[in-house]
Image (cartoon, rainbow over all chains, first blue to last red; front, side):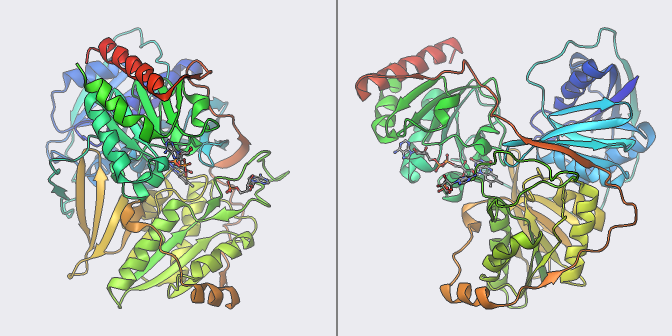
Length: 325
Length: 269
Ligand SMILES: Cc1cc2nc3c(=O)[nH]c(=O)nc-3n(C[C@H](O)[C@H](O)[C@H](O)COP(=O)(O)OP(=O)(O)OC[C@H]3O[C@@H](n4cnc5c(N)ncnc54)[C@H](O)[C@@H]3O)c2cc1C
Ligand SMILES: Nc1ncnc2c1ncn2[C@@H]1O[C@H](COP(=O)(O)O)[C@@H](O)[C@H]1O
């Protein structure tokens, strides 16, 4: 039986969905008669809730590795050393998955290099034909799909949580716990953490509604209105790459292929044309409502509700109406 | 201080890709006729290097464009920003799909630029096939310190590289000792300047420097082989058909407000 190993870095607030790789591994295992083993890495030895979640997500084997010397907010180099040590003991061959996102993707690439394996990047699907592994990946800004093949015994990939969740493993998983004592890199100055400014915008990840603006907002005034609208809806503000480049929104608000991946229930797209690079950052189950002055804009092909008008004629009145009790 | 900026370019994202395919009998993508430009992240990395040069006269910037002869126009566009040196590395058969081979090529590119780099900059994604794996893979292969998704870089008095990035909920400032590799994300602070017209003209006439990539190890089958590439339709979303609001704008706004009120009530907000 093929073993698919999912790595779960716990306790790092920069990893939005640490169990995504377990869910992705379970989906692959269901299609390829595989078995999911999850390696959880944390500072604390008691992580019952995390073990239970790994089991719910489909892990048949769970290894809980704790390292008391891990800093409260671990740096990637610490996670790298600890995971590399674990994998040298636990996984000499097979497929190792990490949660998609900046931390997981950096770990996947560097672990592969460190362990003489093949980095597959961020994949949407992985399957086998005999010894040959094929991986599917978006390319050219999500407009094309590449199919890559390898016979390497050990591969690393980053994956998102699948859109449809698979049934959890039927039997209770086998759980082991170990305490690590591998030397963590000691020569890393900890990053200086900037105090968040009081008016720092909320991150679009995790919000139930995202109010997003693009180049069509034309300036910072438009984004001030988006922030007001987000506030009355208890949502977060997102932005396209050109809007971030223009300085109307912060780096952390960029949604897309090269930015946040968001899965709110509702996405209000205002002054956004709907390019593949932008849409790549919005989950497939998210409902999109679009406001755009151009009736031909691509965004209307993916929206369920559309309003054709310049935002200037829409937002002030909309905010006023929503504020009214 | 030796700064090397690695650039890849992308197919112009506004250009239709219909019929994208492998060159028959090869694992190379047929891109003939597709216009290439710098990606937003190539631009951000280049601007970051130029800013470091402007701030400190001891900074030497070498710009390296990875790609075949089809990239010569792009190379001249880069030369117009007057880095201290600019060259192209790679031939017609260049492929970045196998990360291990790509990392060897990029390592050779940096080695051809300077003996000992202090700071290597590249975009957060490198070309049309990378999603951010190549920068950390290259740093790991070379044993350089790595900072992913930096949006501002400066040099400290003591020779350290100061990098700012947003990592999840926090903004971090890292101080790393060279050699450092940073992948750069777009930000207002690193939008690529416009070149001087005089330098554009100059770059049009200057000879182009091309460095041959190192020969691949004999019988080096790629560890990861590109088997197929094809344009895919955008994934289907929602019900498929958009319901356009009609009537006077005022009434449309009222309908949108009603929709949002219903949604807010349904989620219990
Ligand atoms: C490698 C690479 C990665 C990229 N990654 C990303 C990414 O992660 N995220 C991202 O967003 N982009 C990304 N891009 C950029 C992408 O290609 C597009 O340039 C970008 O998504 C377009 O943003 P936009 O919709 O805001 O602007 P535009 O495409 O210019 O659209 C503006 C829209 O506003 C409308 N409009 C104008 N005035 C008004 C008005 N008054 N009221 C209402 N509507 C109005 C217009 O009709 C138009 O539809 C990437 C590009 C590359 C090459
Ligand atoms: N694959 C293609 N072949 C020929 N023309 C194209 C292709 N893709 C885009 N164009 C045209 O190139 C021009 C530049 O596009 P744009 O950058 O959107 O202004 C437009 O007129 C497009 O219609």
